[in-house]
Amino acid sequence: MRNLGILAHVDAGKTTVTERILYATGTTHKRGEVHDGTTVTDFDPQERDRGITIFAAAVTCDWDGHRINLIDTPGHVDFSDEVVRSLRVLDGAVAVFDAVAGVEPQSESVWRQADRFGVPRIAFVNKLDRAGADLDSAVASIRERLHPAPLVVQLPIGSEDRFEGVVDLLRMRAWVWADGRDGTGGAVEGPVPEALRAEAERRRRVLEEAVAELHPGALEEFCTRSTVSADTLAGALRDLTRTGDGVVVLCGSAYRNRGIEPLLDAVVAYLPSPLDVPAVRGTLDGAQQERAADPAAPFAALAFKVNATATGRLTYLRVYSGTIRKGEAVWDAGAGRTERVGRILRVRADRHAQVELAVAGDIVAVVGLKSARAGSTLCAPGAPLVLEPPATADPVVSVA
Ligand code: GDP
Image (cartoon, rainbow, N blue to C red; front, side):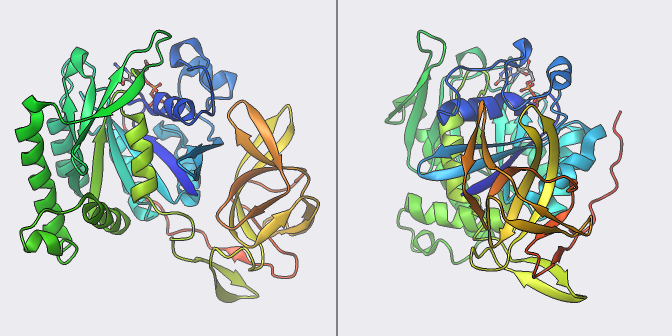
């Protein structure tokens, strides 16, 4: 499982990336377009009108045997209370950058907040098809303005209008996307084009050197000067992503549906599962407690979003420990009352799938809770844990 957020400056392409992820994972069968208001994560008509993702929604999709809960975080700085709340429930994020503009002010403020919450990130440099797109200068702006060491794992094939694919520098294989008849395209994997072989090998060495410097010991093979295997490199990149010492950088064009499959592979390879993250802390009868992501532990969850929908009042929950079943009672620590859980739903883009239970690590929407607000802790009535507020985020600085 991965609880994933997409973080970006408004207009960098967060909605389009989200949409293409839902499409690539088979969650939706028709591509939505921002400009015609058919995107799935932007539920609210007001959002569609404004083209800004105001209300976070969690959507579940599947990739390569993993369940990915996609938590859509608002990108507009005015709504950063919601950004903070959604950051709390993420275990990892994809930060989307515009390949022409590089790091922009809002991407910087969201990045800092994600630092505060210790959210491991990978970077996706989007819009490589645009005139003036430049992966190297976008990467330089990540290094200069956000400060982690960028670890670029792909080499673009073609540029601007002729951007057609990427070389995977770990496996030294090429991904090329062809435009399909219906405009959906498709990925074809093959050998590295001859003309790019030398450059790909040079960039592979740059990547190996950066990793060896940040993570001494991880690349023993490198020290002995033999070839570093893709798996060894991937393991080191996973460690660096989790410590935040480096950020894996991928690229593509969401609009043209290029680069999404390797991005999903990277989410699974580098970002942590809820079972890998440190235990959550809370207070129980005035005493500090830790709760690991264990389905057998007492139930504790955070309500991070409440939506009024045609289905009823939907309370989105991140379950940190224990198991919750349909019909069970929970203690709402914020309101100081017991409530009963009605239906439990997994939101699948265009439909709600009912499930019988949710376990530690899960993100689900619950129907039937009357008092829970965004930010409330819900827990087992016999073990009334209150989840600690996270380390305070920086006050948000408005950027004109
Ligand atoms: P958000 O504000 O970050 O959610 O960004 P959107 O997904 O709404 O995208 C903003 C604009 O950029 C829209 O007009 C998109 O169609 C466009 N866009 C998104 N991705 C790409 C891309 O890869 N290439 C190009 N050329 N345009 C894109």
